[in-house]
Length: 194
Image (cartoon, rainbow, N blue to C red; front, side, top):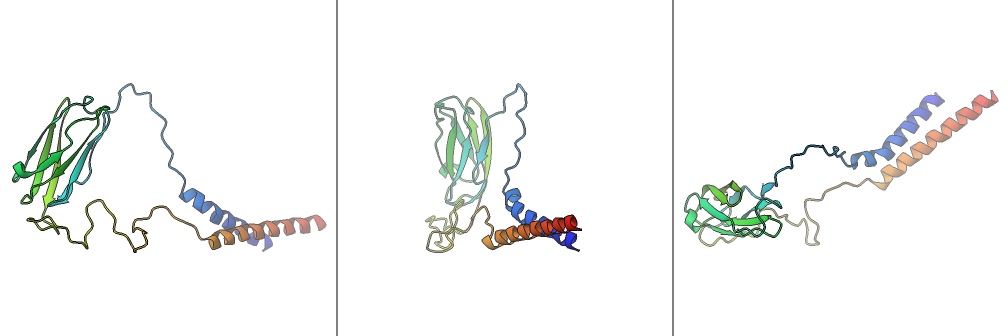
């Protein structure tokens, strides 16, 4: 009976103390391959679905375009002539960030075509949401795309990442580990006397 109780206490204590370390362990990174081909620079569309008067960003990684290249950008879709784009010149490392704002009376899919040293077409969908099409005033109760609403007025936000372990749980795990070790020591000393 004493052996079972000691084994259970030691196991429970070890599991409680190791659980936070296992839960927060970083994933293993695969070893770099010896592939001689380089991976192409990436492209990311920040918000592929937006409401009227919101903006979407299209970000090209370093080396996608030539350094300081002026990239031709064409927009097609409903009332595309009234759409606004900015940031069509690549930086010194060849990266580029373009912002797209649809027309106030636009709706549906918009194709943003980039014609430079490399060609790329991004698709952004625009829908009628909470914005007034004429004034583009936002409802104060609705957050802008890509932002977080504060939980309270003291600066804490809704999206908190990571976790924490109660000190009571850690203390209980340590106590179970100590108790299990004590039971093992008592059992060992009884065996020596017998």
